[in-house]
Amino acid sequence: LIVSMPIRMEDGSVKVFKGIRVQHNNARGPYKGGIRYHPNVTVEEVTALAMLMTWKCAVADLPYGGAKGGVVCNPKEMTKTELERLTRRYTSMIYELIGPLVDIPAPDVYTDSQTMAWIMDTYSQMKGYQVPEVVTGKPVSLLGSLGRNEATSRGVAISVRETAKHLNKPLKDAKIAIQGFGNVGGYAAQILHEMGAKIVAVSDSKGGIYLPDGLNPYSVMEHKNRAGSVVGFDGAKTISNEELLTLKCDFLIPAALENQITAANAERIQATAIVEGANGPTTPEADKILHERGVLVVPDILANAGGVTVSYLEWVQNLKRETWTLDEVNSKLESKIVSAYSSVVQTARKYEVSLRDGAMLLAVGRVAEAIKLLGIWP
Ligand code: NAD
Image (cartoon, rainbow, N blue to C red; front, side, top):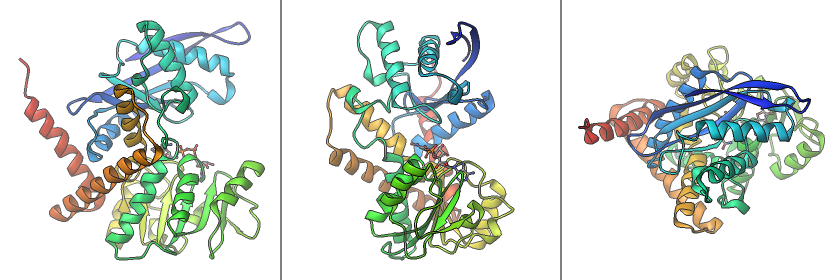
């Protein structure tokens, strides 16, 4: 669905924004996927991301299909009131498509728990009663789930730990480099540090820092909050993002943007394994080179499925009108990711393919089986 949304701006003018919602597949359950606010949003990109959600939910064995939404806008140049009006108008115009048992949006790039609260309120106002289960990633005070903020990172960290087991390597003192120190990378650094690993390098859009003895991610976070970047952290060497990607380490976690590991740098990657926190950080050409060089790549649809998994747990809590403790949420997340990891490894072994191909075989196989069993109506 593509919609045109006239929005009254702060200066009194009216601007028309383009909104998109793509539903890819619902054979395994309601459509599920985030909403992105970005100037470069296109129907093609949203469609690709909707399909990725179908595979991610199937790999994590969640009872969901895949969808994605987007609005072409630059939220950095808009006021909070303009963003609220835009969000409410978008919700009202995709109202017929979404619903707790139909299609459940969530946050994505430049949307957050406040955006989800506006969607919940608009949908609820139109229904006439409160419907928290129509979106996930809500504020905890509005029936969001504990553990949702760091869920993706916890999933990434569990994937690193499972990979260490798979490679027969101890996680303790394993050297880890993380590209991107935002929501995913920042929390992943803290959780892995708690698990005993050594975070030797991190970076953001302004550059990277390297400390072979290991960084304290909590202090780096404080520094970044103060200084606006990880760069300049006391005692660490400044490195470029390119240097970070090719550092000698045990695990490399790209957690920033897509297309970071390419044919131009894949030959020089020295990590034993790459665990994809970001969506699509490795190009297909680089993937081939890494596979030939024996670098293990844990694909995005497995490694970063922790976010949608806790979204699912939030939805179940909302439907049951329950609130679970952080321990309950984390232990359910843990078992979902461990089980997904093991299914992907088994599939990859069975067909003698990479973990990425194993994950895709598993996901497409599960969706195909559902479609076959549902049959054709009437
Ligand atoms: P974020 O905006 O919080 O953080 C992104 C980080 O990347 C920032 O530290 C930014 O400075 C850094 N960055 C930007 N450009 C960079 C560059 N050229 N080189 C190095 N670092 C750069 O975003 P996020 O929520 O952490 O998401 C990161 C990735 O993870 C995205 O690909 C996103 O789609 C994916 N992802 C996020 C979630 C989630 O729950 N947040 C879930 C699944 C996948």
